[in-house]
Amino acid sequence: MAEQGGQKSAQKTTLTAAQKQLSTHRKQLDYWQQHAGRIRRRNLLTGLTIGAFVISVFSYTIYSVKQEKIMDEIDDEARIHIIRGPRTGANS
Image 1 (tube, rainbow, N blue to C red):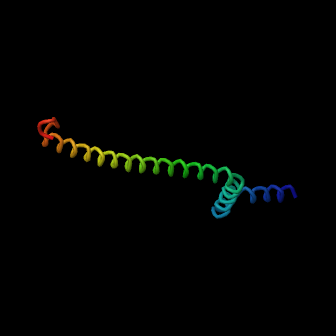
Image 2 (image 1 turned 180 degrees about the horizontal axis):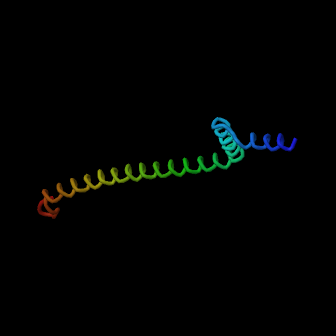
């Protein structure tokens, strides 16, 4: 009878590869179920951070392009005034 108890414990410890994989999969599933809320919050925070960065880069780019257009307009106005010459009482 002592031998049968020893054989049963030996049989329990020798698992097939499929049983080991199933056990590992169940442990991972339990971990994900227990920590799903925390992981979801981290993913949300990461997504919002990346989104904010993208929006800020886009906004800065649009702002810079608008400034360049304004500077081009100012340069054009300056060229016109240089070509016309200074406004004095004699040539106005």
